[in-house]
Length: 476
Image (cartoon, rainbow, N blue to C red; front, side, top):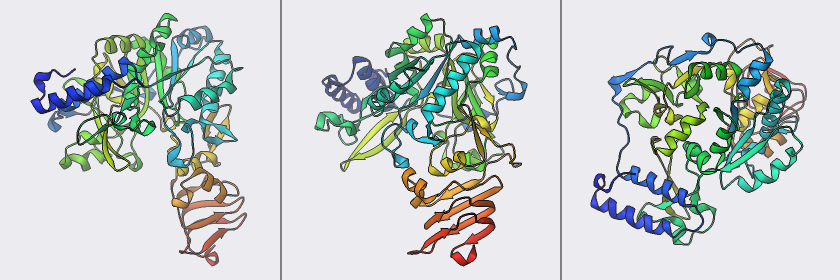
């Protein structure tokens, strides 16, 4: 914790008052209170690492290993079982589906053929376990927002061969900007007084929830952490084998940037260590350089492989001091602050940490209905629990898709398509206004469809639209 000496007397007083108020909050554990005060103390001391732009170096292939240069895993099924017996799969399951107009955890949005993210994840691990006669467990890190719902939802997998564990990430109080007092101390007793402090919290929470020691006692060595909405984040034996062979404590999967990813964090070599550089850390005069695909060619997929013993060592030593992300919010007109950290930023604290530059197929996140359109279309096939790209498409890049606000919520999106169009030969699609799609529509090349204000534009069943701008039925 930042010593009082590093704080001004005004800040030290703020912290002391906050500490007394937090001590009285009985909704959270002592571990959570300690973690929260520690975070605020670090924030007040302004200990953020200052990046000297001239010291940034492009990582070598030893630090960010090209996927194609990674040796294949052993072919002997018994040896593969040995590898998998050391693995735990952890999905970050703290997010709600609110941005897509859904209630409950985002992982229960139906992705394809009536199956949710969680259904597919369970199927993938079932497949792995039956193929190699092993018992890879699935762990879900929930937040207080998703915990109760998730416990009900996973009951449906009670007959599954997959052992499912859950634990909660920390629950911290939002604090009022003006007087640095926790919002729950001011009568905000509902959920909006609290927040989950970002996925950097996965490491202490894994320990505090007892799961870390449990898995270590079972002989597990590595955890594969990924967002539950990334359909490309499947267990990769080649990566697991490489990490065990080379004793890498931490591995971040990165992939080449496209113009859609210019804001994503990137890996750099800095003062002899590999570390994550996020756009928020970049001085204003270098932001355009950061976004350029020429200099910073890769970005973080948030698929992370981490050694469990190393997590235990660093959490117990309180050594994971990731960059703090201040996230200002407003609750009932009151300006509040929540402080967060990201799991990717932990890379610089682990020994022998690397990145692996993986194929784009390992990064298939569903953040909006435009992504849902991609994965529900003929651009992908569902094979077992795996979403596999259709080989018929020649272009390695996915089409860019922009849907207007009428399509933002999943319910509205589904209503507006009688069936999902064929987009195997599509380059880009822009849709705006009150547009409705019939069944069996095919879109090719560059397509723009915009309904005039106050008019409904219906694309008829079976229409084939190629390289067209459409704003009235006559254009079709």
